[in-house]
Image (cartoon, rainbow, N blue to C red; front, side, top):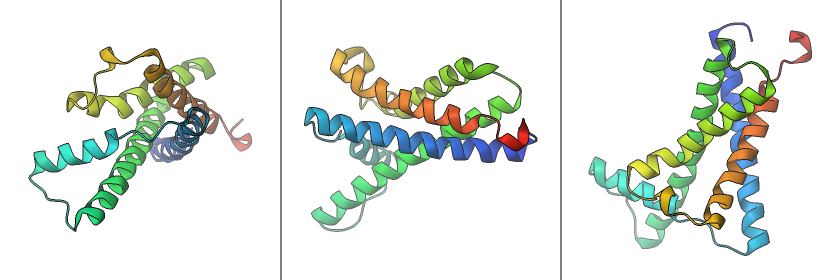
Length: 158
C-alpha cells in the first residue's frame, strides 16, 4: 500500500468485501440450520434510539421495517469501519503476512460486531452456547478471509 488515503480506501473496500462474506455465511447458516435471523440488530437500534431520546417514526409495521433496515445498516457500518481500521493498521507495515492479517481481521470483526451489543447489555458472550459461538465465529471468519484476500497486494504493486 502506498499512502494513508490508499490504505484507508483499500481498508474500506476490504471491509465491504468482508461484510458481504459475513452476510453470505450468516444466511447460509440460517438456510442449513433453519434458524431465524437474530433480533440483536433491531434490539441495538432500539437501545441506541432510547439512549439518544429519538423515536423511530411510523406505525408498527413501518417502525419494524425501519428497525430492520437500521440494524442492517449498523452492521454494514461496523464491517466497513473494521476494514478501515484494518487498512490503517496495515499501512504501518503490521501485521506482516497473511496469517497475521487474517487474525487481525477476525479480531476486529468480532469486536466491531459484538463489542457495541455487549457494551449495551444486549448480548453476553459468556452465556453463549457452542452453537451460538459457531453461528458468530464462522461468519466473522468469512469476513476475515474476504478482507485479507482483498488487502493482498495487487499485481501492479508486486
